[in-house]
Image 1 (cartoon, helix red, strand yellow):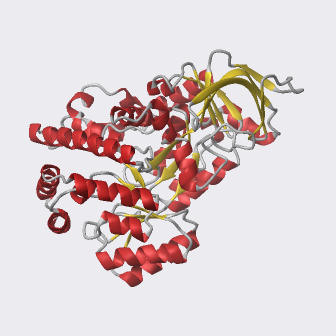
Image 2 (cartoon, rainbow, N blue to C red):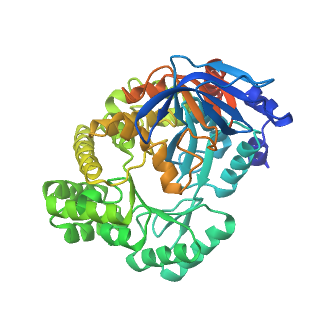
Image 3 (cartoon, rainbow, N blue to C red):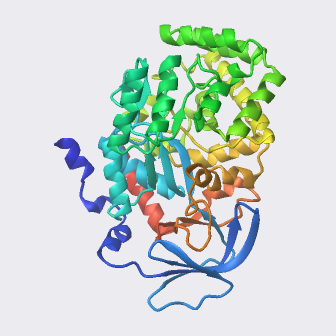
Length: 474
Protein backbone atom coordinates (compact mmCIF):
# COMPACT_ATOMS: atom_id res chain seq x y z
CA UNK A 1 0.00 0.00 0.00
CA UNK A 2 2.83 2.40 0.81
CA UNK A 3 4.28 1.87 -2.68
CA UNK A 4 0.88 2.56 -4.23
CA UNK A 5 0.58 5.82 -2.31
CA UNK A 6 4.04 6.87 -3.48
CA UNK A 7 3.37 6.02 -7.11
CA UNK A 8 0.14 7.98 -7.12
CA UNK A 9 1.48 10.94 -5.16
CA UNK A 10 -0.39 14.22 -5.39
CA UNK A 11 -0.11 16.11 -8.63
CA UNK A 12 1.42 19.13 -6.92
CA UNK A 13 4.80 17.43 -7.16
CA UNK A 14 4.82 18.01 -10.89
CA UNK A 15 4.95 20.90 -13.28
CA UNK A 16 1.69 22.81 -12.99
CA UNK A 17 1.59 23.66 -16.68
CA UNK A 18 1.81 19.99 -17.59
CA UNK A 19 -0.94 19.00 -15.21
CA UNK A 20 -3.40 21.59 -16.43
CA UNK A 21 -2.96 20.33 -19.98
CA UNK A 22 -5.00 17.23 -19.18
CA UNK A 23 -8.09 19.32 -18.47
CA UNK A 24 -8.45 20.93 -21.89
CA UNK A 25 -7.12 20.69 -25.41
CA UNK A 26 -3.64 22.12 -25.69
CA UNK A 27 -3.58 25.33 -27.73
CA UNK A 28 -1.40 25.22 -30.84
CA UNK A 29 2.25 26.20 -30.41
CA UNK A 30 4.02 28.25 -33.06
CA UNK A 31 7.82 28.33 -33.03
CA UNK A 32 8.97 31.32 -35.06
CA UNK A 33 12.17 31.71 -37.09
CA UNK A 34 13.94 28.66 -35.68
CA UNK A 35 17.13 27.15 -37.03
CA UNK A 36 15.92 23.60 -37.66
CA UNK A 37 18.59 20.92 -37.60
CA UNK A 38 18.17 18.04 -40.02
CA UNK A 39 20.19 15.33 -38.28
CA UNK A 40 20.13 13.04 -41.29
CA UNK A 41 21.49 15.61 -43.73
CA UNK A 42 23.54 17.56 -41.22
CA UNK A 43 22.02 20.81 -42.44
CA UNK A 44 20.29 23.80 -40.85
CA UNK A 45 17.39 25.80 -42.28
CA UNK A 46 15.36 28.66 -40.87
CA UNK A 47 11.60 28.14 -40.70
CA UNK A 48 8.50 28.35 -38.54
CA UNK A 49 7.15 25.19 -36.91
CA UNK A 50 3.53 24.65 -35.91
CA UNK A 51 2.66 22.11 -33.24
CA UNK A 52 -0.90 20.97 -32.52
CA UNK A 53 -2.29 18.12 -30.42
CA UNK A 54 1.18 16.76 -29.73
CA UNK A 55 2.34 16.58 -33.35
CA UNK A 56 4.27 18.72 -35.81
CA UNK A 57 1.59 19.84 -38.27
CA UNK A 58 3.35 22.40 -40.46
CA UNK A 59 6.83 23.67 -41.29
CA UNK A 60 7.19 26.67 -43.58
CA UNK A 61 9.18 29.84 -44.10
CA UNK A 62 6.32 31.82 -42.60
CA UNK A 63 3.23 30.56 -40.77
CA UNK A 64 0.49 32.95 -39.67
CA UNK A 65 -0.22 32.69 -35.98
CA UNK A 66 -3.36 30.59 -35.39
CA UNK A 67 -6.03 31.89 -33.06
CA UNK A 68 -5.20 31.16 -29.40
CA UNK A 69 -1.77 29.77 -30.27
CA UNK A 70 1.20 30.13 -27.96
CA UNK A 71 4.21 31.59 -29.71
CA UNK A 72 7.96 31.26 -29.18
CA UNK A 73 10.46 33.61 -30.77
CA UNK A 74 13.24 31.17 -31.68
CA UNK A 75 15.33 33.54 -33.79
CA UNK A 76 19.00 32.70 -33.35
CA UNK A 77 18.20 29.43 -31.60
CA UNK A 78 18.33 25.83 -32.77
CA UNK A 79 15.73 23.06 -32.82
CA UNK A 80 16.73 19.41 -32.49
CA UNK A 81 14.59 16.29 -32.05
CA UNK A 82 14.11 15.21 -28.45
CA UNK A 83 16.99 13.05 -27.22
CA UNK A 84 16.79 9.36 -26.31
CA UNK A 85 18.89 7.47 -23.77
CA UNK A 86 18.89 3.89 -24.99
CA UNK A 87 20.15 2.28 -21.78
CA UNK A 88 18.62 3.30 -18.47
CA UNK A 89 17.24 1.61 -15.34
CA UNK A 90 14.52 3.82 -13.85
CA UNK A 91 12.60 1.42 -11.61
CA UNK A 92 14.95 -1.29 -10.46
CA UNK A 93 18.55 -2.13 -9.54
CA UNK A 94 19.87 1.15 -8.05
CA UNK A 95 16.66 3.09 -8.80
CA UNK A 96 13.99 2.53 -6.15
CA UNK A 97 10.49 3.32 -7.50
CA UNK A 98 9.69 4.78 -4.07
CA UNK A 99 11.66 7.86 -5.15
CA UNK A 100 12.81 7.41 -8.74
CA UNK A 101 9.62 8.61 -10.42
CA UNK A 102 9.65 11.94 -8.60
CA UNK A 103 13.37 12.50 -9.20
CA UNK A 104 14.45 10.78 -12.39
CA UNK A 105 11.59 11.54 -14.78
CA UNK A 106 11.77 15.34 -14.41
CA UNK A 107 15.57 15.16 -14.35
CA UNK A 108 15.56 13.43 -17.72
CA UNK A 109 13.13 15.93 -19.25
CA UNK A 110 15.06 18.93 -17.92
CA UNK A 111 18.13 17.60 -19.74
CA UNK A 112 16.32 17.31 -23.06
CA UNK A 113 15.50 13.61 -22.96
CA UNK A 114 12.07 12.85 -24.37
CA UNK A 115 12.51 9.09 -24.68
CA UNK A 116 14.28 6.22 -22.92
CA UNK A 117 14.76 2.51 -23.41
CA UNK A 118 14.51 0.99 -19.93
CA UNK A 119 16.76 -2.05 -19.87
CA UNK A 120 15.48 -3.83 -16.79
CA UNK A 121 13.18 -3.04 -13.91
CA UNK A 122 9.72 -3.32 -12.41
CA UNK A 123 7.54 -3.68 -15.50
CA UNK A 124 4.23 -2.92 -13.82
CA UNK A 125 5.58 0.28 -12.26
CA UNK A 126 7.07 1.38 -15.58
CA UNK A 127 3.78 0.67 -17.33
CA UNK A 128 1.94 2.83 -14.78
CA UNK A 129 4.39 5.65 -15.41
CA UNK A 130 4.09 5.25 -19.18
CA UNK A 131 0.31 5.51 -18.91
CA UNK A 132 0.58 8.62 -16.74
CA UNK A 133 3.03 10.22 -19.16
CA UNK A 134 0.86 9.42 -22.18
CA UNK A 135 -2.19 10.89 -20.45
CA UNK A 136 -0.16 13.95 -19.37
CA UNK A 137 -0.72 13.25 -15.71
CA UNK A 138 3.03 13.55 -15.17
CA UNK A 139 5.85 14.97 -17.30
CA UNK A 140 8.31 12.35 -18.35
CA UNK A 141 10.00 10.83 -21.38
CA UNK A 142 8.40 8.13 -23.47
CA UNK A 143 9.37 4.82 -21.84
CA UNK A 144 10.00 1.66 -23.85
CA UNK A 145 10.58 -1.05 -21.25
CA UNK A 146 11.86 -4.61 -21.06
CA UNK A 147 10.73 -5.35 -17.53
CA UNK A 148 12.62 -8.09 -15.69
CA UNK A 149 15.81 -9.38 -17.28
CA UNK A 150 16.74 -13.00 -18.00
CA UNK A 151 19.81 -14.44 -16.28
CA UNK A 152 21.00 -17.71 -14.84
CA UNK A 153 23.19 -16.27 -12.08
CA UNK A 154 22.21 -12.75 -10.98
CA UNK A 155 19.92 -12.68 -7.93
CA UNK A 156 17.65 -9.63 -8.08
CA UNK A 157 13.88 -9.02 -7.83
CA UNK A 158 13.97 -7.66 -11.38
CA UNK A 159 15.60 -10.75 -12.85
CA UNK A 160 13.78 -13.88 -14.00
CA UNK A 161 16.04 -16.81 -13.09
CA UNK A 162 16.52 -18.78 -16.30
CA UNK A 163 18.62 -21.92 -16.14
CA UNK A 164 17.58 -24.10 -19.09
CA UNK A 165 16.06 -23.83 -22.59
CA UNK A 166 12.53 -24.68 -21.48
CA UNK A 167 12.61 -21.96 -18.83
CA UNK A 168 13.93 -19.52 -21.43
CA UNK A 169 10.94 -20.04 -23.70
CA UNK A 170 8.55 -19.87 -20.74
CA UNK A 171 10.10 -16.65 -19.44
CA UNK A 172 9.92 -14.97 -22.84
CA UNK A 173 6.27 -15.99 -23.26
CA UNK A 174 5.57 -14.61 -19.78
CA UNK A 175 7.18 -11.29 -20.66
CA UNK A 176 5.08 -11.10 -23.82
CA UNK A 177 1.89 -11.70 -21.83
CA UNK A 178 2.87 -8.99 -19.34
CA UNK A 179 3.35 -6.41 -22.08
CA UNK A 180 7.14 -6.18 -22.24
CA UNK A 181 8.34 -4.25 -25.29
CA UNK A 182 11.41 -6.46 -25.76
CA UNK A 183 13.57 -9.06 -23.99
CA UNK A 184 16.77 -8.10 -22.14
CA UNK A 185 19.31 -10.78 -21.27
CA UNK A 186 22.31 -10.71 -18.96
CA UNK A 187 25.59 -12.61 -19.16
CA UNK A 188 24.70 -15.59 -16.98
CA UNK A 189 22.75 -17.68 -19.49
CA UNK A 190 24.42 -20.85 -20.67
CA UNK A 191 24.78 -21.42 -24.40
CA UNK A 192 21.70 -23.59 -25.00
CA UNK A 193 19.53 -21.38 -22.80
CA UNK A 194 20.67 -18.28 -24.69
CA UNK A 195 19.69 -19.67 -28.09
CA UNK A 196 16.36 -20.86 -26.68
CA UNK A 197 15.70 -17.31 -25.47
CA UNK A 198 16.49 -15.97 -28.95
CA UNK A 199 14.12 -18.51 -30.50
CA UNK A 200 11.43 -17.71 -27.94
CA UNK A 201 11.72 -14.01 -28.68
CA UNK A 202 11.20 -14.67 -32.39
CA UNK A 203 8.20 -16.90 -31.64
CA UNK A 204 6.65 -14.10 -29.59
CA UNK A 205 7.54 -11.30 -32.04
CA UNK A 206 9.84 -9.62 -29.51
CA UNK A 207 13.31 -8.25 -30.15
CA UNK A 208 16.09 -9.56 -27.94
CA UNK A 209 18.86 -7.28 -26.67
CA UNK A 210 21.42 -7.19 -23.89
CA UNK A 211 24.72 -8.74 -22.91
CA UNK A 212 26.27 -11.60 -24.84
CA UNK A 213 27.06 -14.57 -22.56
CA UNK A 214 30.75 -15.58 -22.58
CA UNK A 215 30.18 -18.96 -24.21
CA UNK A 216 28.32 -17.39 -27.13
CA UNK A 217 30.39 -15.68 -29.80
CA UNK A 218 29.39 -12.14 -30.69
CA UNK A 219 29.22 -13.17 -34.34
CA UNK A 220 26.89 -16.01 -33.33
CA UNK A 221 24.68 -13.64 -31.35
CA UNK A 222 24.50 -11.25 -34.29
CA UNK A 223 23.75 -14.04 -36.76
CA UNK A 224 21.07 -15.41 -34.41
CA UNK A 225 19.25 -12.08 -34.43
CA UNK A 226 20.18 -10.30 -31.20
CA UNK A 227 19.28 -6.73 -32.14
CA UNK A 228 21.57 -4.77 -29.85
CA UNK A 229 24.68 -5.57 -27.84
CA UNK A 230 24.97 -3.64 -24.58
CA UNK A 231 28.29 -2.50 -23.08
CA UNK A 232 31.69 -3.12 -24.57
CA UNK A 233 33.02 -4.71 -21.38
CA UNK A 234 30.14 -6.87 -20.19
CA UNK A 235 29.40 -8.27 -23.63
CA UNK A 236 33.06 -9.15 -24.16
CA UNK A 237 33.68 -7.13 -27.31
CA UNK A 238 37.41 -6.87 -26.57
CA UNK A 239 37.52 -10.62 -25.95
CA UNK A 240 35.80 -11.24 -29.29
CA UNK A 241 38.54 -9.20 -30.99
CA UNK A 242 41.33 -11.23 -29.40
CA UNK A 243 43.49 -13.75 -31.22
CA UNK A 244 42.72 -16.14 -28.32
CA UNK A 245 38.99 -15.40 -28.15
CA UNK A 246 37.79 -18.97 -27.57
CA UNK A 247 40.16 -19.62 -24.65
CA UNK A 248 39.44 -16.24 -23.08
CA UNK A 249 35.69 -16.74 -23.36
CA UNK A 250 35.99 -19.99 -21.40
CA UNK A 251 38.09 -18.27 -18.73
CA UNK A 252 35.62 -15.36 -18.57
CA UNK A 253 32.71 -17.74 -18.07
CA UNK A 254 34.51 -19.66 -15.31
CA UNK A 255 35.52 -16.45 -13.53
CA UNK A 256 32.02 -14.99 -13.76
CA UNK A 257 30.39 -18.12 -12.34
CA UNK A 258 32.88 -18.32 -9.47
CA UNK A 259 32.66 -14.60 -8.69
CA UNK A 260 36.38 -14.09 -9.34
CA UNK A 261 36.26 -10.39 -10.20
CA UNK A 262 40.04 -10.03 -10.36
CA UNK A 263 40.25 -12.90 -12.84
CA UNK A 264 37.68 -11.20 -15.09
CA UNK A 265 39.94 -8.16 -15.13
CA UNK A 266 42.89 -10.35 -16.07
CA UNK A 267 40.92 -11.85 -18.96
CA UNK A 268 40.09 -8.37 -20.25
CA UNK A 269 43.76 -7.37 -19.96
CA UNK A 270 44.77 -10.41 -21.98
CA UNK A 271 42.16 -9.61 -24.62
CA UNK A 272 43.47 -6.07 -25.02
CA UNK A 273 47.05 -7.34 -25.27
CA UNK A 274 46.12 -10.02 -27.83
CA UNK A 275 44.03 -7.75 -30.06
CA UNK A 276 43.64 -9.12 -33.57
CA UNK A 277 42.81 -6.58 -36.31
CA UNK A 278 41.56 -9.34 -38.60
CA UNK A 279 39.24 -10.73 -35.91
CA UNK A 280 37.91 -7.26 -35.20
CA UNK A 281 37.37 -6.51 -38.87
CA UNK A 282 35.46 -9.76 -39.37
CA UNK A 283 33.26 -9.00 -36.35
CA UNK A 284 32.49 -5.46 -37.51
CA UNK A 285 31.48 -6.79 -40.93
CA UNK A 286 29.13 -9.29 -39.29
CA UNK A 287 27.51 -6.61 -37.14
CA UNK A 288 27.05 -4.34 -40.16
CA UNK A 289 25.63 -7.13 -42.34
CA UNK A 290 23.07 -8.10 -39.68
CA UNK A 291 22.39 -4.50 -38.63
CA UNK A 292 23.25 -5.38 -35.05
CA UNK A 293 23.40 -2.23 -32.93
CA UNK A 294 25.95 -1.56 -30.19
CA UNK A 295 25.36 0.60 -27.10
CA UNK A 296 28.87 1.25 -25.73
CA UNK A 297 27.83 3.03 -22.45
CA UNK A 298 31.13 4.93 -22.40
CA UNK A 299 30.07 7.36 -19.69
CA UNK A 300 29.65 4.49 -17.24
CA UNK A 301 33.23 3.39 -17.87
CA UNK A 302 34.42 7.01 -17.68
CA UNK A 303 32.79 7.38 -14.25
CA UNK A 304 34.72 4.37 -12.97
CA UNK A 305 38.00 5.60 -14.47
CA UNK A 306 37.57 9.13 -13.07
CA UNK A 307 36.05 8.17 -9.74
CA UNK A 308 38.79 9.91 -7.72
CA UNK A 309 37.82 13.29 -9.20
CA UNK A 310 34.08 12.66 -9.05
CA UNK A 311 34.01 11.82 -5.34
CA UNK A 312 35.57 15.23 -4.70
CA UNK A 313 33.28 17.21 -6.98
CA UNK A 314 30.15 16.03 -8.78
CA UNK A 315 27.31 18.52 -9.30
CA UNK A 316 25.01 15.62 -10.08
CA UNK A 317 25.10 14.50 -6.44
CA UNK A 318 22.51 17.17 -5.62
CA UNK A 319 19.94 15.39 -7.78
CA UNK A 320 20.10 11.90 -6.29
CA UNK A 321 18.59 10.89 -2.94
CA UNK A 322 20.86 11.43 0.02
CA UNK A 323 20.52 7.69 0.67
CA UNK A 324 22.16 7.05 -2.72
CA UNK A 325 24.67 9.90 -2.45
CA UNK A 326 25.84 8.43 0.87
CA UNK A 327 26.98 5.33 -1.05
CA UNK A 328 28.97 7.42 -3.52
CA UNK A 329 31.45 8.88 -1.02
CA UNK A 330 35.17 8.08 -0.90
CA UNK A 331 34.62 6.15 2.33
CA UNK A 332 32.07 3.83 0.71
CA UNK A 333 34.00 3.45 -2.55
CA UNK A 334 37.46 2.70 -1.13
CA UNK A 335 37.77 -0.58 -3.07
CA UNK A 336 36.99 1.14 -6.38
CA UNK A 337 39.33 4.04 -5.56
CA UNK A 338 42.41 1.85 -5.16
CA UNK A 339 45.14 3.05 -7.58
CA UNK A 340 45.29 -0.27 -9.41
CA UNK A 341 41.50 -0.22 -9.96
CA UNK A 342 41.56 3.32 -11.33
CA UNK A 343 44.48 2.41 -13.59
CA UNK A 344 42.59 -0.64 -14.85
CA UNK A 345 39.47 1.39 -15.64
CA UNK A 346 41.56 4.06 -17.37
CA UNK A 347 43.09 1.43 -19.64
CA UNK A 348 39.65 -0.06 -20.24
CA UNK A 349 38.22 3.34 -21.21
CA UNK A 350 41.04 3.97 -23.68
CA UNK A 351 40.43 0.61 -25.30
CA UNK A 352 36.69 1.17 -25.47
CA UNK A 353 37.22 4.50 -27.22
CA UNK A 354 39.50 2.74 -29.70
CA UNK A 355 36.95 -0.01 -30.38
CA UNK A 356 34.09 2.46 -30.89
CA UNK A 357 36.26 4.39 -33.34
CA UNK A 358 36.83 1.19 -35.31
CA UNK A 359 33.18 0.16 -35.19
CA UNK A 360 31.98 3.54 -36.40
CA UNK A 361 34.55 3.62 -39.21
CA UNK A 362 33.34 0.18 -40.28
CA UNK A 363 29.70 1.28 -40.32
CA UNK A 364 28.47 -0.43 -37.14
CA UNK A 365 25.27 1.20 -35.85
CA UNK A 366 25.86 2.93 -32.50
CA UNK A 367 23.26 3.93 -29.89
CA UNK A 368 23.73 6.42 -27.06
CA UNK A 369 23.10 4.91 -23.64
CA UNK A 370 24.39 5.65 -20.16
CA UNK A 371 23.48 2.76 -17.81
CA UNK A 372 22.53 5.48 -15.30
CA UNK A 373 22.88 5.25 -11.51
CA UNK A 374 26.15 3.49 -11.31
CA UNK A 375 28.22 5.57 -8.85
CA UNK A 376 28.42 9.17 -10.10
CA UNK A 377 26.40 8.35 -13.22
CA UNK A 378 23.39 10.65 -12.88
CA UNK A 379 20.46 10.19 -15.29
CA UNK A 380 19.86 13.02 -17.71
CA UNK A 381 23.14 14.86 -17.28
CA UNK A 382 25.10 11.76 -18.28
CA UNK A 383 23.67 11.64 -21.82
CA UNK A 384 25.39 14.82 -23.12
CA UNK A 385 28.69 13.50 -21.80
CA UNK A 386 28.09 10.17 -23.55
CA UNK A 387 27.71 12.13 -26.79
CA UNK A 388 30.92 14.05 -26.08
CA UNK A 389 32.80 10.79 -25.48
CA UNK A 390 31.49 9.47 -28.79
CA UNK A 391 32.98 12.50 -30.55
CA UNK A 392 36.32 11.67 -28.90
CA UNK A 393 36.25 8.39 -30.84
CA UNK A 394 35.98 10.20 -34.17
CA UNK A 395 32.24 10.61 -34.57
CA UNK A 396 31.30 14.07 -35.80
CA UNK A 397 28.83 16.06 -33.68
CA UNK A 398 26.16 15.11 -36.21
CA UNK A 399 27.09 11.42 -35.94
CA UNK A 400 26.90 11.65 -32.15
CA UNK A 401 23.56 13.46 -32.26
CA UNK A 402 22.26 10.73 -34.52
CA UNK A 403 22.96 8.07 -31.87
CA UNK A 404 20.38 9.75 -29.61
CA UNK A 405 17.80 10.77 -32.25
CA UNK A 406 17.60 9.08 -35.64
CA UNK A 407 19.45 6.01 -34.37
CA UNK A 408 16.76 5.16 -31.80
CA UNK A 409 14.08 5.84 -34.43
CA UNK A 410 15.73 3.42 -36.84
CA UNK A 411 16.25 0.86 -34.08
CA UNK A 412 12.55 0.95 -33.16
CA UNK A 413 11.59 1.13 -36.86
CA UNK A 414 9.65 4.32 -36.26
CA UNK A 415 9.32 7.47 -38.36
CA UNK A 416 7.52 9.62 -35.76
CA UNK A 417 10.56 10.23 -33.53
CA UNK A 418 14.16 11.30 -34.07
CA UNK A 419 13.36 13.94 -36.68
CA UNK A 420 11.61 17.28 -37.13
CA UNK A 421 9.20 16.52 -39.96
CA UNK A 422 5.51 17.17 -40.47
CA UNK A 423 3.69 14.23 -38.92
CA UNK A 424 6.34 13.57 -36.30
CA UNK A 425 5.73 13.56 -32.58
CA UNK A 426 6.33 17.01 -31.13
CA UNK A 427 9.25 16.04 -28.91
CA UNK A 428 11.61 18.95 -29.50
CA UNK A 429 14.50 20.66 -27.74
CA UNK A 430 15.25 24.36 -28.28
CA UNK A 431 18.95 25.16 -27.86
CA UNK A 432 20.86 28.41 -27.54
CA UNK A 433 23.71 27.17 -29.76
CA UNK A 434 24.34 24.80 -32.65
CA UNK A 435 25.18 21.20 -31.59
CA UNK A 436 26.52 20.45 -35.08
CA UNK A 437 29.43 22.75 -34.22
CA UNK A 438 29.91 21.48 -30.66
CA UNK A 439 27.92 18.52 -29.34
CA UNK A 440 28.24 19.98 -25.84
CA UNK A 441 25.69 22.58 -26.93
CA UNK A 442 22.94 20.02 -26.28
CA UNK A 443 23.28 21.19 -22.66
CA UNK A 444 22.31 24.76 -23.59
CA UNK A 445 18.59 24.16 -23.37
CA UNK A 446 16.19 27.08 -23.69
CA UNK A 447 12.99 25.00 -23.75
CA UNK A 448 11.73 21.45 -24.10
CA UNK A 449 8.56 20.58 -25.99
CA UNK A 450 7.32 17.28 -24.63
CA UNK A 451 4.58 15.64 -26.70
CA UNK A 452 3.52 19.13 -27.77
CA UNK A 453 3.61 20.69 -24.30
CA UNK A 454 5.96 23.64 -23.86
CA UNK A 455 8.29 23.65 -20.86
CA UNK A 456 10.19 26.94 -20.72
CA UNK A 457 13.65 27.44 -19.23
CA UNK A 458 12.00 28.88 -16.14
CA UNK A 459 9.76 25.84 -15.77
CA UNK A 460 12.68 23.46 -16.30
CA UNK A 461 14.66 25.30 -13.62
CA UNK A 462 11.70 24.97 -11.26
CA UNK A 463 11.62 21.24 -11.94
CA UNK A 464 15.32 20.96 -11.13
CA UNK A 465 14.93 22.92 -7.90
CA UNK A 466 12.09 20.61 -6.91
CA UNK A 467 14.21 17.55 -7.66
CA UNK A 468 17.04 18.92 -5.48
CA UNK A 469 14.63 19.59 -2.62
CA UNK A 470 13.08 16.14 -2.80
CA UNK A 471 16.46 14.42 -3.21
CA UNK A 472 17.69 16.00 0.01
CA UNK A 473 14.69 14.56 1.84
CA UNK A 474 14.94 10.96 0.57
